[in-house]
Image (cartoon, rainbow, N blue to C red):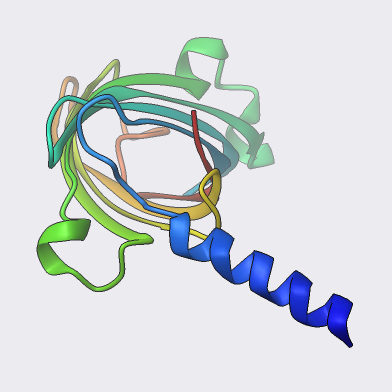
Length: 161
Protein backbone atom coordinates (compact mmCIF):
# COMPACT_ATOMS: atom_id res chain seq x y z
CA UNK A 1 0.00 0.00 0.00
CA UNK A 2 2.86 2.40 0.82
CA UNK A 3 4.42 1.72 -2.59
CA UNK A 4 1.12 2.55 -4.30
CA UNK A 5 0.85 5.87 -2.41
CA UNK A 6 4.44 6.77 -3.36
CA UNK A 7 3.80 5.95 -7.04
CA UNK A 8 0.58 8.00 -7.10
CA UNK A 9 2.36 10.94 -5.42
CA UNK A 10 5.18 10.83 -7.97
CA UNK A 11 2.74 10.70 -10.87
CA UNK A 12 0.75 13.61 -9.42
CA UNK A 13 3.94 15.65 -9.08
CA UNK A 14 4.72 14.91 -12.72
CA UNK A 15 1.30 16.17 -13.79
CA UNK A 16 1.76 19.39 -11.82
CA UNK A 17 5.00 20.17 -13.66
CA UNK A 18 3.47 19.64 -17.10
CA UNK A 19 2.79 22.74 -19.14
CA UNK A 20 1.40 22.80 -22.67
CA UNK A 21 3.22 25.94 -23.91
CA UNK A 22 6.07 27.72 -22.13
CA UNK A 23 6.49 30.73 -24.39
CA UNK A 24 9.74 31.96 -25.91
CA UNK A 25 12.15 29.13 -26.68
CA UNK A 26 9.56 26.38 -26.20
CA UNK A 27 9.92 23.51 -28.67
CA UNK A 28 7.29 20.94 -29.54
CA UNK A 29 7.51 17.89 -31.80
CA UNK A 30 4.34 16.06 -32.79
CA UNK A 31 3.81 12.83 -34.68
CA UNK A 32 0.41 11.51 -35.61
CA UNK A 33 -2.07 10.21 -38.12
CA UNK A 34 -3.55 12.35 -40.90
CA UNK A 35 -7.13 11.73 -42.06
CA UNK A 36 -8.78 13.16 -45.19
CA UNK A 37 -11.05 12.09 -48.05
CA UNK A 38 -9.50 9.34 -50.17
CA UNK A 39 -6.42 8.89 -47.93
CA UNK A 40 -4.86 8.46 -44.51
CA UNK A 41 -1.26 9.15 -43.69
CA UNK A 42 1.45 10.40 -41.37
CA UNK A 43 1.79 13.94 -39.96
CA UNK A 44 4.95 15.43 -38.38
CA UNK A 45 5.02 18.90 -36.79
CA UNK A 46 7.70 21.05 -35.16
CA UNK A 47 6.86 24.34 -33.38
CA UNK A 48 9.22 26.89 -31.82
CA UNK A 49 8.04 29.56 -29.36
CA UNK A 50 8.90 33.15 -30.34
CA UNK A 51 7.04 34.83 -27.50
CA UNK A 52 4.59 34.27 -24.68
CA UNK A 53 1.76 33.33 -27.06
CA UNK A 54 3.40 33.04 -30.50
CA UNK A 55 5.09 30.10 -32.20
CA UNK A 56 6.23 29.27 -35.71
CA UNK A 57 7.05 25.94 -37.21
CA UNK A 58 6.92 23.35 -39.94
CA UNK A 59 4.42 20.61 -40.63
CA UNK A 60 4.74 17.79 -43.11
CA UNK A 61 2.27 15.12 -44.15
CA UNK A 62 2.43 12.11 -46.43
CA UNK A 63 -0.62 10.16 -47.63
CA UNK A 64 0.08 6.44 -47.18
CA UNK A 65 -3.30 4.75 -47.48
CA UNK A 66 -4.82 5.97 -50.73
CA UNK A 67 -8.15 4.71 -52.10
CA UNK A 68 -7.64 2.21 -54.93
CA UNK A 69 -9.67 4.35 -57.36
CA UNK A 70 -7.03 7.12 -57.40
CA UNK A 71 -3.90 5.27 -56.25
CA UNK A 72 -2.53 4.89 -59.79
CA UNK A 73 -3.16 8.59 -60.52
CA UNK A 74 -0.96 9.89 -57.69
CA UNK A 75 2.80 10.19 -57.31
CA UNK A 76 5.07 11.37 -54.46
CA UNK A 77 4.39 15.07 -55.15
CA UNK A 78 0.64 14.53 -54.87
CA UNK A 79 0.92 12.62 -51.60
CA UNK A 80 3.43 14.93 -49.87
CA UNK A 81 2.82 18.37 -48.32
CA UNK A 82 5.10 20.73 -46.41
CA UNK A 83 3.82 23.76 -44.49
CA UNK A 84 5.36 26.76 -42.77
CA UNK A 85 3.03 27.69 -39.90
CA UNK A 86 2.25 30.44 -37.43
CA UNK A 87 0.36 29.70 -34.18
CA UNK A 88 -1.32 31.83 -31.55
CA UNK A 89 -0.95 29.73 -28.38
CA UNK A 90 -3.94 30.66 -26.22
CA UNK A 91 -3.71 28.15 -23.37
CA UNK A 92 -2.71 30.72 -20.76
CA UNK A 93 -5.24 33.25 -22.13
CA UNK A 94 -8.30 31.01 -21.80
CA UNK A 95 -6.82 29.48 -18.62
CA UNK A 96 -8.61 26.12 -18.64
CA UNK A 97 -5.61 24.18 -17.33
CA UNK A 98 -1.86 24.83 -17.55
CA UNK A 99 -1.49 21.43 -19.26
CA UNK A 100 -3.92 22.47 -22.04
CA UNK A 101 -3.15 24.64 -25.08
CA UNK A 102 -5.46 25.86 -27.84
CA UNK A 103 -3.60 27.11 -30.90
CA UNK A 104 -5.33 28.55 -33.95
CA UNK A 105 -3.00 29.47 -36.78
CA UNK A 106 -2.21 30.05 -40.43
CA UNK A 107 -0.05 28.02 -42.78
CA UNK A 108 1.59 28.44 -46.16
CA UNK A 109 2.09 25.08 -47.86
CA UNK A 110 3.12 23.55 -51.17
CA UNK A 111 -0.61 23.06 -51.90
CA UNK A 112 -2.40 26.12 -50.46
CA UNK A 113 -2.66 28.94 -47.97
CA UNK A 114 -4.68 27.62 -45.04
CA UNK A 115 -5.68 27.71 -41.45
CA UNK A 116 -5.67 25.26 -38.59
CA UNK A 117 -7.03 24.91 -35.07
CA UNK A 118 -5.38 22.53 -32.67
CA UNK A 119 -5.29 21.47 -29.04
CA UNK A 120 -2.60 19.84 -26.92
CA UNK A 121 -2.81 18.32 -23.49
CA UNK A 122 0.35 17.28 -21.63
CA UNK A 123 0.22 14.46 -19.07
CA UNK A 124 3.84 14.98 -18.01
CA UNK A 125 6.55 17.54 -18.71
CA UNK A 126 7.52 15.70 -21.89
CA UNK A 127 4.49 13.85 -23.25
CA UNK A 128 1.02 14.82 -24.37
CA UNK A 129 -1.63 14.27 -27.01
CA UNK A 130 -2.73 16.62 -29.77
CA UNK A 131 -5.61 16.98 -32.21
CA UNK A 132 -5.62 19.45 -35.09
CA UNK A 133 -8.03 20.35 -37.88
CA UNK A 134 -6.65 22.06 -41.01
CA UNK A 135 -8.49 23.65 -43.92
CA UNK A 136 -7.55 25.54 -47.11
CA UNK A 137 -8.35 29.25 -47.35
CA UNK A 138 -6.92 29.72 -50.86
CA UNK A 139 -5.85 26.98 -53.27
CA UNK A 140 -3.00 27.57 -55.71
CA UNK A 141 -4.81 25.65 -58.45
CA UNK A 142 -8.61 25.31 -58.35
CA UNK A 143 -8.44 22.26 -60.62
CA UNK A 144 -6.45 20.26 -58.05
CA UNK A 145 -8.74 18.79 -55.40
CA UNK A 146 -6.64 15.85 -54.33
CA UNK A 147 -4.84 15.59 -51.01
CA UNK A 148 -4.45 18.51 -48.59
CA UNK A 149 -6.70 20.89 -50.56
CA UNK A 150 -9.56 19.84 -48.31
CA UNK A 151 -10.39 19.55 -44.63
CA UNK A 152 -7.83 17.32 -42.86
CA UNK A 153 -7.67 16.05 -39.30
CA UNK A 154 -4.51 15.06 -37.40
CA UNK A 155 -4.28 13.28 -34.07
CA UNK A 156 -1.27 11.90 -32.22
CA UNK A 157 1.47 12.38 -29.63
CA UNK A 158 3.14 15.64 -28.67
CA UNK A 159 6.60 15.92 -27.10
CA UNK A 160 8.54 18.73 -25.42
CA UNK A 161 12.08 19.03 -26.72
